[in-house]
Amino acid sequence: MGRLEVTAHLKVRPGQLEGFKAQVAEIMRLSREKDTQTLRYDWFIKDDGTECEVHEAYAREEGLIEHNAHVMEARALLFEKYAYDHRMSVYGEISQPLRDLFDKHAGGVSSYSFLLGLESTPAVST
Image 1 (cartoon, rainbow, N blue to C red):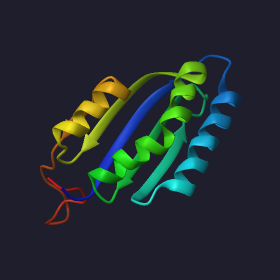
Image 2 (image 1 turned 45 degrees about the vertical axis):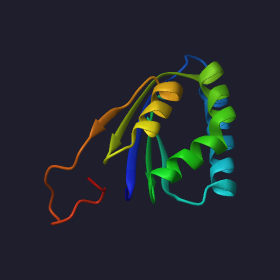
Image 3 (image 1 turned 135 degrees about the vertical axis):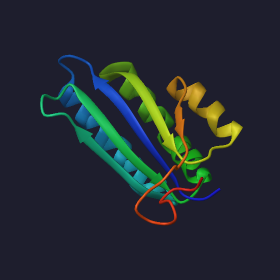
Image 4 (image 1 turned 90 degrees about the vertical axis):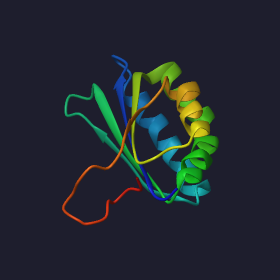
């Protein structure tokens, strides 16, 4: 399986925006220091500070599994104290073990396969 793209959507707990930002910074530090197959890991916050989207891309499925291992504890703290309502979408084919990982750590995943685009080949694998 080739390149994999993921989008996460989450909400910031009321009154916890500063703690949320600090914990995101810790997750980013871990990703920068340890990840070897992460191509994109961009966090976007809604103007009112109540919601966040994370746009991720990995060279291959194993990159997401590696990333998960690196940030697991810091991400658990993020959701324990600062965020809730975690929803994940994946763009590209994923294996059953990865689907199981999504079920365990993200409450499941919505999976989308490439249909049609401007380029003759999709940016993500199908």
